[in-house]
Figure 1 (cartoon, rainbow, N blue to C red):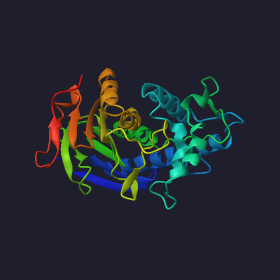
Figure 2 (cartoon, helix red, strand yellow; figure 1 turned 120 degrees about the vertical axis):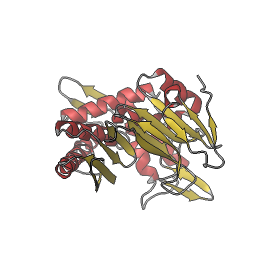
Figure 3 (cartoon, one colour; figure 1 turned 45 degrees about the vertical axis):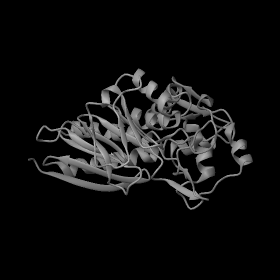
Figure 4 (spheres, rainbow, N blue to C red; figure 1 turned 90 degrees about the horizontal axis):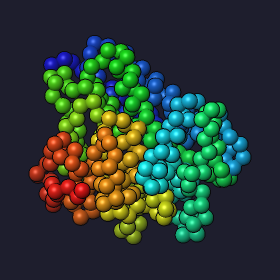
Length: 324
C-alpha cells in the first residue's frame, strides 16, 4: 500500500490531524496548516484583529466590509439557521460566553442573566449587503461566533488544496470534523468511528463507510460540567438559553460538504429526533445518525448502507426501522 504520513497541529481552538498519501505529503500538509491559520485570522471570535471581532465591535452601529469568504460563511450560516428553524444560530455568541462552558469561567448563569441576553439572539438581525460584501448586526451588544461552522468550511478548503496538489487519497480531522478525499489507496472506503457517548474517547458504537464525504458529530459528552449531579453541556438552545434538552446525546451528519454538515449537526441535535430526522430526510445530499439518551440508535435511509453497528456496544439498541 502507498505510504502515508500523519501531521498533527493545533488551530481554531482544537486538534487537527491530516493524513496524506503521496510523496509530496509533507509539503501539502504545510499548505493545509497555512490555510487554517489564514481562515482563523479572518473568522476567529477570539482574535481581536479578525473580521468577526471587528463586526461584533460595530454591533448596533455600523456595517463592516468583509472579505468575500467571511461574507459567504455568514450568508450560509443564515441559510442553515432558516433550514433548522433557528436552532443553529451564530448570534448565540453572547450566550455561549455567559455560560463559559469548558473554560475557566464556566458557571450556571442566573435566570435573569439568560433572559436579559435572549433578545440578542436572532440570526435575522444580521443584515447583509451582497453588492458591498458588508454585514451589520442590528442591535448593540449582539455578537456572532462562527465556531460551529468555520471548522467545516476550513476542511472543505483544505481538501481543495489536496486536489490542486495531485493528492488522490487523504483525510483531515479538525476537532471531530472529518472530511475524506477519495478512497484509501487500496480502493476501500474510509471507516470513521462514531464515539460511544458513555465510554472513553476512541470507544465506538459503530463505524461509517465513506468516500469523498464528511462526517461531523455534535455530542454532549466532550464539553460539559456537572453541578449537583446535573450535566450542563456546551450545545446551547438559542430559544431557551440553556443546554439543549432534546433527548439527543449525539447527532452525526454524513454528506459531501463539511461546512453544511458542521452547521446541521448542531441544528438537528437541538431539534431532537423526530424534527431532526424529518429535516435530514427532506434535505438532499445528507444523512444522519442519532443516539438518544435512552441508548437507542436511529439512522436515516441513506445511512443504513454506510453504518456498521458495533454489536459489542452493550446497552445500545440499533433501531433499523426508519421513522419516515
